[in-house]
Image (cartoon, rainbow, N blue to C red; front, side, top):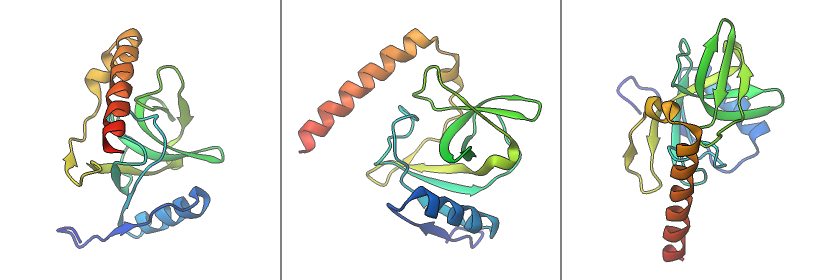
Length: 157
């Protein structure tokens, strides 16, 4: 429990169609939800399958926040890249071109804390510098990051 007596609910490795509606229910009841996201779209800030994110019910969306949102029939954990009127444009930090568009009502919760695979707290950044980098530099950084991840994985096995 946190200082505000909010519970952190840990739910692991279930189908998103089952889990995320349950996340939404828990968040509406003022709980916090901790889970391990899948995928690599938020590299280098969130490593899918390893890092944990802790969500809280949504407040007013701001550029730089990482949010869990329903886009059509899918769910994404991406950063708010731009806000244009009622449209909220999301993009994964590791996605150099793709983006999603949603509205505030599509946002289920926002990330308030990140934990690395080893349990240490990771810095929750708004990704300002990352968003300002030209795509060509992001490609280089992501390539180096992937190499480091592959090397560290080989040494662990």
